[in-house]
Image (cartoon, rainbow, N blue to C red; front, side, top):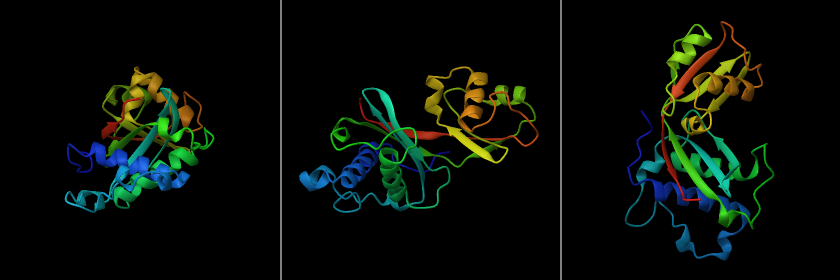
Length: 197
């Protein structure tokens, strides 16, 4: 199960992420504070943001990936996790240059809140392929001292479980067909909220 967030958490989480990015880029100083109100202040007081939570923040620009950074294990308040991952997705994703102030207003932001990862008991690649649930499972792969994850949203591009698994191994820096007794898989689910591109 995912961290407990209310069904209407999307606007709050998306505003937190966008506010963190704009603040980092110095944009917030040029806009009204009402654009990104403090979610812990005022009549709504979104106290669930203070519970520990793990999140990923994904950025798209012109429908293309522009950054994605996240946390697999909840160890800090969800509010802090979303803020930190939003800033990291915009500034330190090694696949992309940092987002510039001119790009920030055009980003489409997605915030995914993760459940606690649970081990998948498998002894072979074939077992793993049969155990994976397309479009449901986020997957963490650990092997040979390396680790990588794909959010459930990646199933939209990699619909075949074997292709998904091979690509995940490549992401971890392993050969696409790597399998040995040290391979560990775990799964998680997400509650995801996204802006329209």
